[in-house]
Image (cartoon, rainbow, N blue to C red; front, top):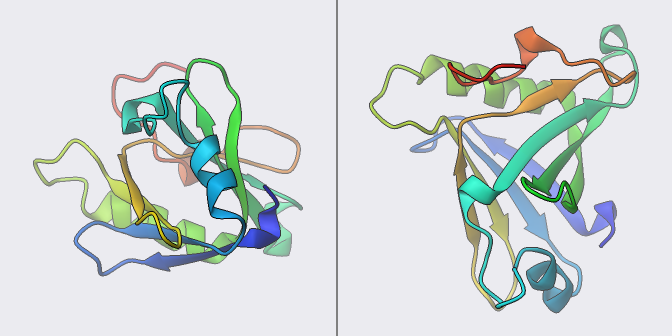
Length: 146
């Protein structure tokens, strides 16, 4: 799957702050990436989200948003994304952190024919272009030790 098969947009005013990923590549390829050996979609607790900058933060760079399988570390998908939009998602998720729901934001993957896939997540790890964790820009749930 190629990054250019995706378009990323942020909806801050949605029920939950949402990162929408529109996919226009081969449907079967996306579905196979997001399913286990029994063809069941991975659950949200099996998926981790990260964003890595492609240049120093001062340069207002673009970055790459990714979903990985929590146990294997396998990349499920990668998407080029605007850093300012992603940081607006983080800010909106922080602003709503006082609700009763344990999740802070949603990743919705729009795919043709098979319907959308949504993951309600609470963590988003943001890394600089050198691979260092940017704690202030990340969503790190309480109780997570790094």
